[in-house]
Length: 126
Image (cartoon, rainbow, N blue to C red; front, side):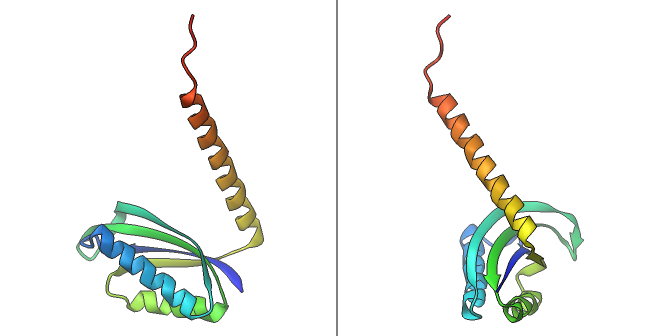
């Protein structure tokens, strides 16, 4: 099994609940092929760098997963055929990239915890 990350852009006309449905359906494709989902992150609607047809924005979704190479190829094929997917990018993650992602996530969690602790402190009296 290899580690992958796929980012895809869905049509902007989809409601938030429909984006959630599509993300879950795409995750099921991977599970059905013997893979497992590590993380799904819905990044929200964003303006596209360039128009795709007449479309100027889309709903971005990033998903990290483990799967056999055949499952990743099948997912890429199905995403290209899906009518709600404007673009997709599937990349295989190497061990160094995974280590960097884990370090970044850990650092971000520590910074968030420190900020939370700082805001919970009572103000200092002068």
